[in-house]
Amino acid sequence: MAITIVKETIELPEITFDANGNAFVNKKINLMGQKRHQILQVDMFCDAFPSSQVNVETVISAYPSIPTNMDYDPGNNFTNRYPAAGDESVFFKERRLELANQLSTLATQYPSKEIAANNTSLFYTDHVYVNMHFMGAASATINNIAYSFLLVLDDKNVSVLEHSMGILQESHDAMCALIMSNGHMRSQAALRGNVFPMWRYGGIRPEHTVTPIAANSFFLDIDTRDAEEMVTTAAVRQTVADARTMSAFDQAFGDRRPGWMRMNLNQGIVAGAVRADPIPLKYADNGNTRMF
Image (cartoon, rainbow, N blue to C red; front, side, top):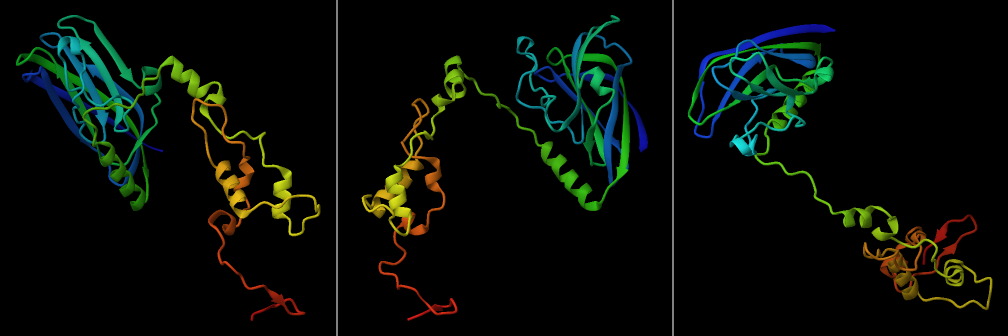
């Protein structure tokens, strides 16, 4: 285990917000090349209090984190937040409300403090970025920005192939979507009907099978019971089609055909005769097929 300790700071005498009240700052930290980096510990510290109250969003990622079109706090018109903490491109994320000239800060982070002390994020890029998003009054200027960061990394040698594929994946993960929508609204009735009980979801009724008379008389080479009636190829073909038909989700289980009817069927039954009048096979005494 090769432990690397990275200590970095971001210090600015002042920052000016844009018309939407946003200010974005990032810093690139170079790491050793052709390594697999595992983040063991992450820590962030505010060295000074800004001149006025400000919301801060911090992300540590392999590539610069791209602001999205999603809101941070619509009530205060704070927009263009970074990707969610659960995004693959995010190694560490912290939100905090800096209170000017007061010894208190409201902060929350992902992973939590308990987990961040034993982080297991892996990445292959030869650099890591510290991204900060400051939110305040539109076009205002605040002073006295100072933050410190600590990263403890475990670096391991890897093959060129693994390193290249890892960088490719991370570069693709960094291409975030401007708007994410990956949840699904479900009603109580839909949850009950589609999940419990299962018969509401539809299916084949296994207790309803094709009659044994029809099955025996068709599949056996010799009809052992002369009283049984032979079935036609078209009838069997229809039976197979019925066995593969599902009913609607809001109805009880479907057609009266078993699931096993779809197995062990030759192509002549399903698709029709391969040849209308096949040539009968003749065998020699040694078992070879004789062709005529």
